[in-house]
Length: 468
Ligand code: TRP
Image 1 (tube, rainbow, N blue to C red):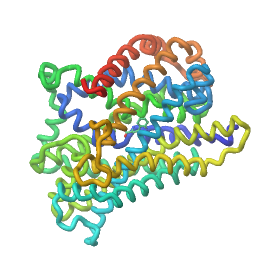
Image 2: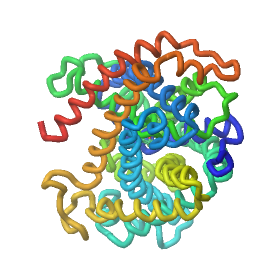
Image 3: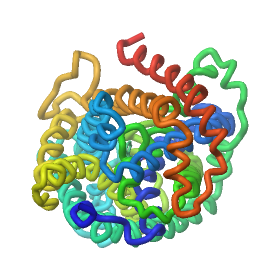
């Protein structure tokens, strides 16, 4: 069975894949803006507390359940108890939904990389002098284009997952992540050396605890923003880390890995902020949230840099494409590994390539409404709101990030604290002489602290889902 499933070739390779999963669009466009508009340092402080009290706990829990059972999400839960199987299915369902919109956005980023390449090489597929707002507006209304780029991104993801664990995901991540770090550094250096960059640093880092008493924002809203961001950013709550943990060798330290991944993810998020915000302010622009930051505002930033702009634009969007791909492969892997394990357990020989292709094709179709509704702009191929309320992107995001993931993480935590319990967990963690120094801390968090925070997050999410 081991051969059919595959295994990471090294702990470094596993770390690159896991950090690659964590570092993605969430870090680059979510974090800098959320931090800046929620009190800067005040947000960071809450974020860090949540990473320790929830992120680390759920990360360790997921990795341990994965390695202990040696199975992907659904079958890992089934092995703990038949009555938990549906939690695994909820994770796989989240994988379908998240990847559906993630791939459309990945396609957008790919399009911008190509456009900056065209601009740099002075070829006709550059921006041709269009203003950033017009260019983006025209692109998202161009159905064939958004669909083709969604397809390209999805195919890229499928091909890597087809290669398997060590030969596909690990091999790609081991090259992609260091390259990503280098490119990020180049863009940061350009950004913070621009005249006027200081305002961007102040936007992100200036401690502004008055947000807590600001009637428009307030403590709870900051907490909610930080919590949602943290789960999404760390790829938690849907079994991604269970799946990645199931391919990990018994000799590696789960505890150490569960510390390194959140730290690396937070460093990447802060660096993404340094790459983006100083430059935005240096050119006198206002930071925005959501897609317009990444496409409209940053397009304008790079075009304002003069002749070197297209080069930095190209590097930046390539970096975002890579970050998105190392995340999308982890999402496709959650769904693929379910089918691989299912076939294996039935005694059949799974054909990973075929499974990845079929699942990828289904997810591509699920993503089509996101690609075709023009993010709600009038005149799109597929106009119309879900329940008369949401554009498809926000609907998929609410469903997965807003509800299924925090719910999955809450249940995982309770199972870890009350069903598996620390002794059994510790046995797996300490296999091969590794330590479990945080045992007492994890025990209290998994049983009480993390679930309480999770319930709070879930209640506020459900309330916003139903329009309160
Ligand atoms: N963490 C990634 C990001 O920040 C997205 C992602 C990858 C993800 N795998 C996931 C989110 C699993 C939730 C669950 O962009």
